[in-house]
Length: 325
Image 1 (cartoon, rainbow, N blue to C red):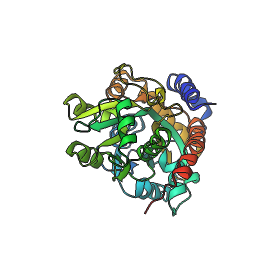
Image 2: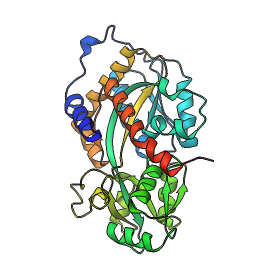
Image 3: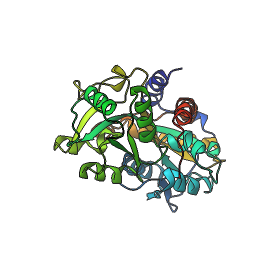
Image 4: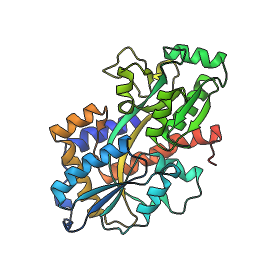
């Protein structure tokens, strides 16, 4: 099944249909005297942080315990991931993370934990990466960017949230398909990268639209293209990269996973709560404002997407010879 069809299947089946509670035997009970901790393995200010807090509010209302979002950035998400991997498998510690933690990091780092042992809970949202540029970069369209970078090898640089992240791999895929050279500048998360992009320290960034939308409206940044399979409804004049570079697709997601050996009924209960949350009109409105597509699938569906992402990005890592210091 293609990635696009897989996400369509998840959205149409999981988001709008409640998870069958009768299959949960027994239904896990969470104690209100204990806090649930969602570890976000990046600094504050990104999509993962915002979603953790949004979903945490709904989990508190339904399950009882206060949900605490804990930012533990560093090592491309590995510090936070390892903390969750070592936590008790009781549903009180969860990891909010994008795909590269599970599908890329094992190929780039010597990990102190087994990433495959995490228990998938749910993919909360999916969204395309978009290509934005500092206003001073001397191009205004995707076609102009390709022409400029071909004529000026290594003249431009591009930011990423860190080596091996989706923004890094997107840049490498772009370079490969366009036949251009650009310099990679890794950061520790979205926030610091956007700060330097605004300051003109870096030229380009493959990033989620919501992280830069206000700066695009102010004219400090410009939107050159989307990495999704089609154009964005709100920006019909901005092309999808695959229109000029066939085969380019950069779509990411944000999901929850639990520590190894977490019982299936706990993962299913948490997934059910998230699914109920994203059906609420207020949550849908907030997600629309963030330019993300609600998914809230099952643990099994998340596991299938992780497997497909591994197949997608491993060749990019190998062909670009991506390494981390």
